[in-house]
Length: 277
DNA sequence: CGCCGTACCTGGAGGC
DNA sequence: TGCCTCCAGGTACGGC
Image (cartoon, rainbow, N blue to C red; front, side):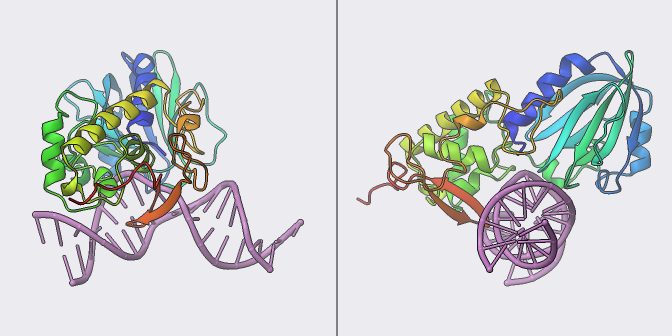
């Protein structure tokens, strides 16, 4: 499901295609897609706007508009896709269409489950966006900063990684993969990671997210790049979705547990908790 | 304030 | 074959 690498993949694919183009019209086709904004204001802001650039913040895609207009944020949530097309799509799940000019075309927001949203960054954006934490692939994400965030939380570390106001962009798949790469037990309380584990987890997050960006994300079911192609990282997942299979590092059976209502996949042998002293 | 559980939603998988 | 139930999960929100 779309996490930082998938969203980054979408932004990188759209940037050269959308830069310098104009939005003729934004067509909202489902009442839930603009539930965090006034739909009329959203359509008005997009109407005739020249696209200034594309950025990513956490799992949000930011469409910057010229002429002093506020940016439009897109969140794909579980099943959202931004698909380019020249004409109308046959899908019954098209929730919004950016009609593009010069050259003519469409950027379709397709979303089976209608969890995804479009909203204006005009000061009325939801709290979740405003309070996003540090970008894990930026130079701001230092070991010291990560250690400070972990130290102030007693939440289990894997659940901590899902909290967007701490570190932005990590979802269930990469949280599991990073804990495995760092040999960190997912149930370990965040503040109890020692220096070594903090360093390993910090490096693992950067490595796993970086590799997944290079591979253009993970497609388990719904994720598609804007040209409709899947991501390539799925076959490189070592623990996610692999309950009962041997750990590629130590051959112990991968376990599935539930933390805060979410599945966690991990290796009980090589992700052992710290020894008591 | 921090943390937790639940709602939102639909397609696909699995049971019988 | 078909009907039923359950599960996936990011974020908003209510409750404690």
